[in-house]
Image (cartoon, rainbow, N blue to C red; front, top):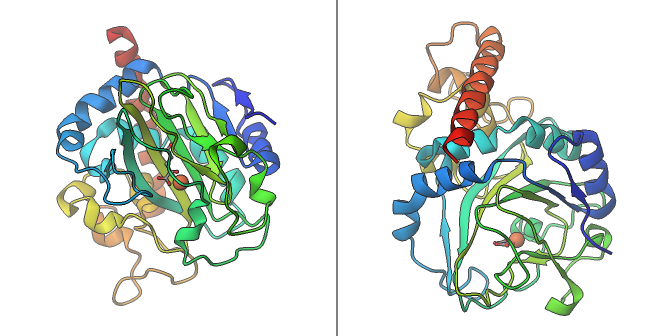
Length: 296
Ligand SMILES: O=C(O)CCC(=O)C(=O)O
Ligand SMILES: [Fe+2]
């Protein structure tokens, strides 16, 4: 069974339906390659300063650079991509809400071994969520081309329906091959792992993951993104980062205040501000991406 590919103008419903059937899907060329280059340029100093992993799971030749919302305007745009958010709503919309779970550049260097095959939702203390109850949705944006040779993510389509705690080998998986600017979606329940890099160049992806709003985030957004930056960010993004209720009263501040009012006290009418903010943000993103296209 192979991974289904969609064009960038595919509907979120179709992609969410494929995720429900297979647990995995690829949208080809969702961003122009120049946008990926821009992200690489913004993050290069951080990536260069990141140490390799300290065990086989993190990858002894893999660099994991996070805090991307604080560090890269391009990553803010990717986190808020309207198609991605619509797909996330389709996959995680059964709960009160969803949030950013982690933001991470995964740079797999030449010679790196394959990562053990796993389910990402094991991070929640190996809790056995019911089959079909998705708690996490990953996007992995290809910053470089992903090939079987250079360490494309290895995935087992339909494995979201398998039993828990199973073990697999590379031969049981298939590579999520895709072009730069394409994005791989996979649920937290799908068995997968980073591939071995047998090429002579680094394989780079931007992993932006979403989870149900009442779960603990893997990357602590409040501490990873400096407050001085957070208070300049759009409301919609802040809410996704966790400056919002994760359910009734979940995450309130002191006298039962909405956290958004702490980080953006300038907003008198938060609800009215929300939509205005979203429109401005989308206009600005379109301008930035158009500009990038011309520069390519
Ligand atoms: O880098 C990849 O291709 C996937 C990495 C991964 O699955 C993980 O770090 O949990
Ligand atoms: Fe993973």
